Length: 248
Length: 180
Image (cartoon, rainbow over all chains, first blue to last red; front, side, top):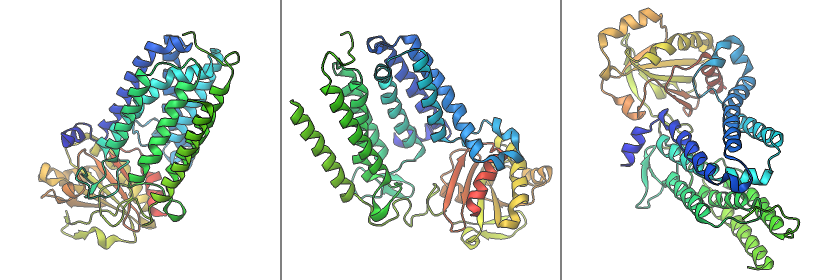
C-alpha cells in the first residue's frame, strides 16, 4: 500500500497533495470564517492573493538570486519547471500580500489568523503526505519493527509520524470549542505544531546540524514555541473588557 | 487551570524541550547521508559502470573530483528531447571547468535503433551511456523520465530534478553549484 501510494504520487505528481490540501483546508475554513470576523469572500480572496504571491514571489526571488544565469537565457523566467523556485522568497511574498490585503480590508489580524488556521492545519497534512510520496524529509536509520525501506536503509517513517501529529492537531482544533479570545486558536495551533516538530525532528535523517550535533530545526521550533506560549499567556491575561472577543 | 499552573506548565514544556534538544543531538555529525549511497540529495551517488555508444566503459566512481550531471532519458520521451539542446549548450559552456555529462539512455525501454539518429539530430557531444539491463534505472530508483542528478566533485548528489524539460537557467544554477 505504501509503495502504491508512493508510485501514484511520485515526483513531480506529489505537488498535487499540498494543492488538494489547500483546497480542502480552505473549504473547511470557510465554514467557520464568519465566526472569526472574516467573511467567506474575504478569506477566499486572501488565500488566492497569497497563493498567487507565493508562486510569483518564489519565481521572482529565485530569478533575482540567480541573475547571471537568467541574463544568458531570459526566457527561462517563464519556464513551467517548478525547480526554478525559492520557497522562502515565495513565503515572504505571500505573507506580505496577505498583510496588505488584511490592512486594506481592515480585517482583525488575530481574527484573520484564527480563520486561516484550518487552512494551515490541513496544508501541513498535505505537505507531510507529499514528503512521504517524494521520500524527502526522511528519517534516520533504525532497527525498529515499523521502519520503512527508504534510500537504501531501514528508516524511521518520520513523514508518517509528522502526518499523524498533524492529523491529531487538526482533529483536536476542529472539535475543540472556540475560545472567545481572538488569537488563541491560531496560537494553540502554532504551539502544538512547533512542539511536534521539536520532538519529531530528533528522528529525521536530513537535519541541518549545528555545534555538537544540535539540530537547527529544533532550536527554531523551541524559539517559536517559547514566543507562542508567552503570547498565549499575554492574550489570556487581558481583561475581558480589553480583549478582542468573538461574538459567541 | 490557574494562571500560575499554566505558566508552570509552559516552563516545564520549554525545559523539557531544551533537554530533548541536547539528548537527541546527532553525535555522528552527519545525519544527512552517512555512507549509504542513494539517489537523493545529500547522499553519495550510487556507483555504476556502463558502456557508451562509442564502446567506451565508464565507471561513475572513477570520475570523482569532477562535477557530473547524470541524466536518465529515452528517445520517445518528449521532455527528454526538449531538454537535450539546453544540456548540450551547458555542457559546452562548462566542460572546460570540469563538468561531465553522462546521459544514460534507458535502453531496456527504448528502441536501440533510434539512439544514433537522435544523437545526430541534436548534435550531442557528451557521453551517451546505454543501460540495457535497468541497472542504473534500478539503482537510481527511476520513476519519471527525464530524471537528472547533479553530483559534486566529492561524489555527493547535490540536487535531483525529476521531470522536465529543465530550463537553461536551472541547469546553469545547478551546474555552478556542483562545480564549486
